Amino acid sequence: MLRQTQTQKMIQKLSPQQIQLMKLLQIPTATLEQRIKEELEANPALEEGADRDDPYEMAENETPAAEEGEQGGEDLELSDEEYLKEDDFELDEYLSEFMDDDPASYKLRGDGYNPDEEEKSHPVAVESTFHEYLEQQLGMVDLKDEREEKIAKQIIGSIDDDGYLRRDPVAIIDDLMFSQNIYATEDEILYFLDKIQRFDPAGVGARDLQECLLLQIRYKLTHEENLDDEEILTYKIARKIISEYFDEFTKKHYPKMQRQLGIVEHQLKLSIDAILRLNPKPASGFNPNNSRNSMNYIVPDFIIENCDGELELSLNSRNAPDLRINDYYREMLMAFKDNHKGRRASRQEKEAIMFIKQKIDSAKWFIDAIRQRQQTMYKTMYSIMQYQYDYFLTGDSKKLRPMILKDIADITGLDISTVSRVANSKFVQTEFGTKRLKEFFSESLQTNDGDEVSTLEVKKILTEIIGDENKRKPYSDEKLKNMLQKKGYNIARRTVAKYREQLNIPVARLRKEL
Image (cartoon, rainbow, N blue to C red; front, side):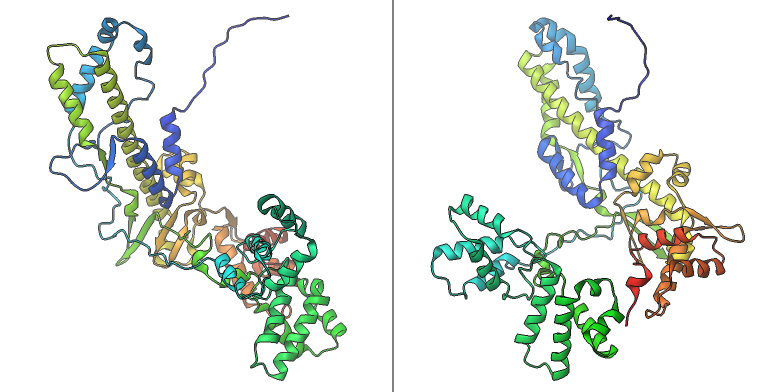
């Protein structure tokens, strides 16, 4: 049986402007430039440029622009007379308010702007790519016809950025059939792959790590003529280790390998060291300028400088773009106001002005959102700097205080989610290096004296203990727990294991060395 009831609910919804503001707050400085570029392309009323004699720019006390929905879209269905009467008062009021705005310069460069910082361009070297380099070497291979060249190029194109061929021959055969209309056999694919695996850099075209290491060892033995007898023996033992005892090698079962190979410990150590010097990603050593991640350099969002014992915080100048309202749009509104005196505007004029109003409102809101982003970021980072003042003065990780998002939220009066957005993917430049903001947040751990210390301090000491251990007999997690407890830290073995994994430190067996 269907029933119809009426209920009242109170729910909180974010406006589109608030949602976009949250997104602006979350993105790092490097991404902000692209976001501003997109807005400049989408909104002709917004522009970025140098100073002008009489600029019209938004005053600092401006409120965010009205929502785009306030355009009176339904009024367009009214008659001309009704339409003009409906919006005349609102439009006149808007024009008066718009013309009375303070034309003060808007730079987004108040507190936190570093005037000494200059925008620097990053030159990019023009070089051939890794795959082009392989195709150049293909020209030195004796190929019968164009068909064989296409097969070889298809194999080269299937090699990834690490230098591995992770596609099955059957998949390459299918690609040749569909894209080149060429039928090839698996034996042909393997034949040309063997040719490519002899290219530079050594190890290219390998299908797994084991084959990659074997290819590099083969290159050492066949191409390096200055190897002495001991080095040749070392690489031959290394080749046998990789080909026959690869599982034992990855698990560091050194005594077992030594017994089965029938060699002394010194020879085993030389062979292991030779293997460790090989490149597990052969393509990375060829041309790092052309790797996909080469341009992902870190752009700091904040800069902290130590001036005679006093810390000074500034925002990266890229957070303060020179945004303004386009003068051409302002002049159109002024011309309309002058021509509108004593008569009513036509429908076409009204629609044009409402379009201009929408674009200007959108530009005002974006400028205000950028300013609010800047103020929120500065306020949050300043609170973090004050909270971790001793660390930023000395750079000693042991002086980091336990700090969670709620601590900064209570100081700034911001919501925890807002602090989280600021801390996410943001970096601060200090005299001790560029650090991720998230690194300064940590839980607390109680000492035997009842004091609370940061877990970052415990991780720092744990790293130092493992760094100083005897690698022939590395410490177990139980031993590490006992050593930390002797230093006054109340910690459990499973917590030691958790911190060790977070630090990307392997278990004791895998830390063992000869």
